[in-house]
Length: 401
Image (cartoon, rainbow, N blue to C red; front, side, top):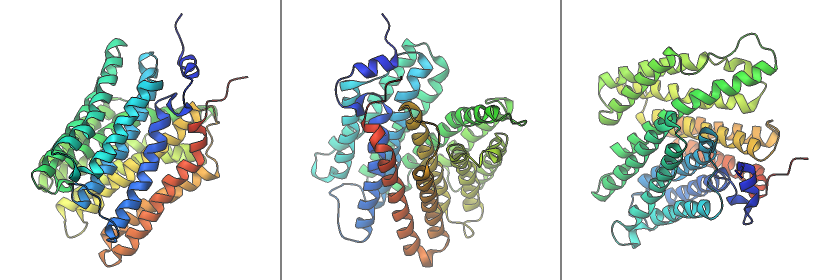
């Protein structure tokens, strides 16, 4: 007799946190986002020095991009792929083992200076390799060829992590290298692909319930496909030649097209529902990042490149992941899809972190103040996620009556 996802999750007798993929990775990914920021602030203040082979800036960049985002991508895919393929999710000790690989990667990178050369890198890289193998198996067995694109982007993300480590090993500042840019580009495209499906879909469902006259344009029309192609080309060019004027022009076009794509999703009608407008805002940082990255290339004295990069890393990645984490957690733990005061508060605090981080790059004379504010807000947002959502992530889903 074929089991359902709910039946398999309920049969797991171990800790509830390993009963579904989103549970450990969303919860402890958020914990790591807060803890890594605390460590980064202490490192900047000269109060601690981690035994890592990476320079402090590269460690900070790596642990947000490949550490935090690696966890959230895993939680999302391990939850979404069973829905895409109709197969059962990874639960129990298999899930716990995959989670342990991610934890081992965080410890290994933070203490890489005390291990034999290459060991910490192998430990860190193994998580994404195993995750990719699991997703590949599910897609192939489920014959869900449509989502091979998502697996391809995950593979590029894993390759970017490898390149990051290789750049660091040869003495480069990896935070300024191809590996980081390739990782950023892969995640931007994940948002363009997956966000381009879920944002208009969730918005349409909500607006239909309210009998709205104007509904979002259906996803992946010809305009969306053209936007996708141009964005890929612009990002590939940016990875290889981040200072070239032609790349600035390509990013500007990609930014305008993604802004137009977002406008077709009727986000202005969702202002009364935080669970929806936060998704639209998260996607908005994709075109904003592209446009300001273009400005940083074309007029470098007008806008610093690091500020443009944080529109993507803190804005698009931070806001969109928290938006998806909160919505998915509510839906998969049997809660109402309504943003309570705590959820709204953590959204606003996270937005404050993004604004302050961008301000630090624009007004360097006040950088210390804005860096401090951004760090405090960032920590507050992810601690807030743990406080608000930790209890339901750690406990079994209530049985239906």
